[in-house]
Structure formats: structure tokens, C-alpha cells
Amino acid sequence: MDADEFQRTIEESMSVELERLGSSKLLVARTDANLTTEAVLRAVADGERAAMETFESWADDEEYTDAQDAFAEFSEQESDHYDWVVALLDGEHEPDDTDADPMHDRLRTLETTVDHLGGVVGRSLVADRTHLQVVNFFVNEGDERRADVFRELRSETGAQGDRAIELLADVCEGSDDWDRARTVAEDVIDIAYEAYADSLDDLGLDPKPIC
Image (cartoon, rainbow, N blue to C red; front, side):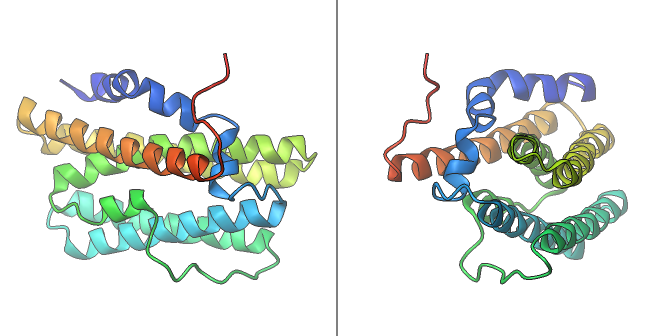
């Protein structure tokens, strides 16, 4: 496996989960069916803060310099994203003091450089779907200013995944490392999907698309 094949393989193996995470039901699950502007922004703010803290902890422990630099930059980027979202809330946001969401709980258990980089790729694919749904939400609300903010968040988060794949090409010593990174990425996506499906189930909704 190589860098070009890596993401394509993950998107193919996790196509069902990623497709469902990219549905309009995603924000229903993230807000407990409270589809107001404030609820959507607060849910996203919690996610950006969780990502900031995850990457910060990785940067503190990472021994491989290029990966350490990347994680530190990702943490700063997510801090900026958090600030942007809070600004859309007029500067008012109380971080959720409960545990991080299941996806970030899983990310924080990862220890090796290969695992971390695989986790970034999985998280970026999940976040891509989240940000797209937030963009769509604000487009439907006729709020292009907020939609543009989330277009930029989506682009920058996708670039994190691309950079992680480039670093994997440097650190993977063979197919076993590539397979390990892929397994981690798929696991991260699966956990995000299960949390999404469980939230919909609690609301009496089915995550499967209506055919």
C-alpha cells in the first residue's frame, strides 16, 4: 500500500458508514433533534475543542519530530476553529465538562506515531461529513457568512488528513504499518458511526437511508 491508495481503500471499506455520517440526520443526532443555530454551533464548538485537546496531548508525547510539529499545528488550528465557532455564538460557550465524545475517547488511547496518523485520517473523514452538513444547514438558513466559515473549517480539516497520509509515507516501514494505520482509521470511523447510530436510536430514528 502507498499514500495514494491509503485513503481510497479506507473510503471504500467504510463507504456505508461514511455515507450515513454524511446524511442530513447527522445534525439531528449531534443536537438531540434541536436543530437551532445555537444548538448546531454549540455541538460543533464541543467537537473542535475536543480535537484541539487531543492533538495537544499527542504533540506533548510524540517523539517523531515531523509528526510532533504536525500535531502541534493541528492543535493550534483547532483552537482557531473553536474560536471562530464561539465568535459565531457571540463569544459565549461553556465547554461540555463531560467526557469527550466516543471518537475522541478512542483517539486519546492511541500511542504510536502510526496509530496517531491513522487516527488523524479517520477523524478528518468524519469531520469532512460533519462540516459539510453544517455548511448545508447554514445555506438552507440563508446564512452564507456562517456557511463560509464552515467551508474553510472543512478545507483545513481535510488538509490535516492529507498531511497525515504524507507523514505515513515517511514512517511506515512496510505493509504491516500501513495496515495498522488503516485499521485505526477504520476503527475511528466505526466508533463515530456507532455513536451517531446510537444517538438516532435514542431518538427513535433509523440511521439507514430511506429508499
